[in-house]
Length: 186
Image (tube, rainbow, N blue to C red; front, side, top):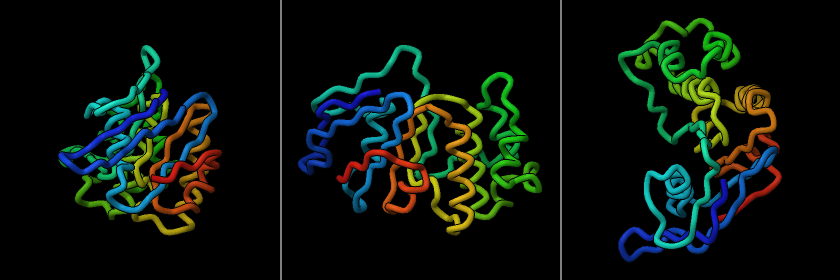
C-alpha cells in the first residue's frame, strides 16, 4: 500500500497536506502527532472509508488489511471468542490467539464483562486472526499498562512476521516496541 501526496480537508480546515508513505514487506511505520492532526483520518483514507481531496492511495490487488480501530468495535452480543472467530482466516486458531493476548479465562465473556484493557486485547486478537496485510493499528495499546504493552507488542510482531505495520500513536515508546523504522509526524 502506498500513500502518495494525499491531502484532505474537513470543510475549510486542512487536516492532511501532501502526506506520503509506503507500506511494503517488512516495513514498520509510525504516524505520530497531537490529537486532531489527521492520524485517524489517514487510516480512514487508506482503508477507502473516505476519499482524499488530492493525491493517490495505491493498493495491491487482493490486499486485505487487518485493522485495530481507535474504538474496539467488538460486537456486544458475541463473546470474545466469537468476536474473533467470525473474522478469522481459514485454519486460524482463534483460541490460541486469545491465549496469546492473555485472555484464556475471558474467551466466553461478552465485551461488557471485560475490562477496557481486555476489550482492547480482544480487538487486537480479532485483527490478528483476520490475517490480513498490512496491519493497521490505531492506538492499539490504549488502556494497557506498560508491562502488558511490551508483551502484546512482542506478540503482534510475531503474528505480523514480515507483513507491513502502520502504527498510529502519541507515544514514541510504542513505536519502539513495534520496531518502527520510520516515524511520520503530522
